[in-house]
Image (tube, rainbow, N blue to C red; front, side):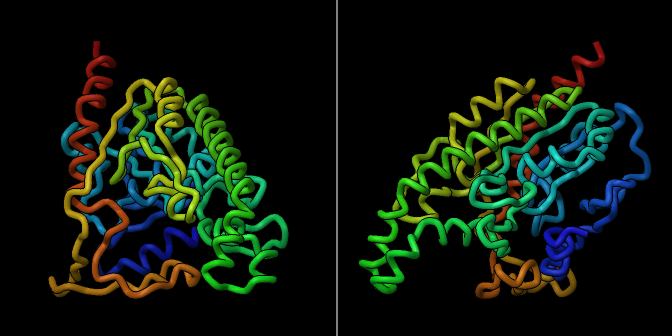
Length: 312
């Protein structure tokens, strides 16, 4: 069972029951309810990360879209996933290619293996130089601040600025490499799909952004981290439809206990110990329920168009 999804449920159970189940013989766990049957052309599939899974949301955009279209959805949202992860899951291909169409979320660039780390397409990475495991952000921090400089000058603000400048060219090269490999993973994945594909941009920001090399957060940008308009435009040329949903409606989302109806806090370390932070009383990272509805509404016309064309 994935460390990502099993512990999303452990972390979030007070707020939402994701009804996790193992899909067939894939060995992978996805958000339920578990489908009773998946006949050819009798459903559509959604590929994505935590945004598609629907963290902290009772109703996800796949479920809302399914209700509106009158066609069941297979939600393959997987925590921390990037295109490389789905590219490696050969067991999912029959489920994808027997569906009516696939909604393909634009996922983060940080979940892409590169010369710094291997990650199998997930956000929890293994450093190549020494085998240590950590989140992708921490891996970037270690690269961003040249340790040779801080070892000499200490950890003052000036030392960190010098260390940052020392590592600048390394970071620029790494970002360029990740973007190229991310695109390659996506294009190989799309090539393996034999059904219509709707590419979905689902974020609080538009695809246009200029990375700021003064910090890791500035380089990453908001989710999907490291992804820009040029990358998205490249992908959309290989898909049947492109839908852009940029929204912040309902953010921050107050976390409410489904048992008491009262505000509750969530312990982030229940997801992964390395992600431990102050308890969350609000969700400011994942799409809110209102944003899920916005995504479903944005997808409606393209998905209905595919269904209509297949009936002609």
